[in-house]
Image (cartoon, rainbow, N blue to C red):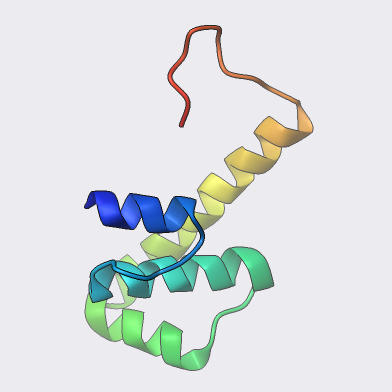
Length: 85
């Protein structure tokens, strides 16, 4: 993944990242923040990836959201000396 994409995600914007990455980042942000996505966003990703990969992408986003909630609810912390994410 390009460093610009990682930086944009960390800084909560989409400026300067490749259009293909921005499409996924914006879809993910909408899904996580609003729990909904626009019909246009969904259609664009379905056309780009096909139905199966679109469902896999959406499921992966949901899975990582669940893991984050579990970590937060259990107040888990990284091991001492672990590299920060």
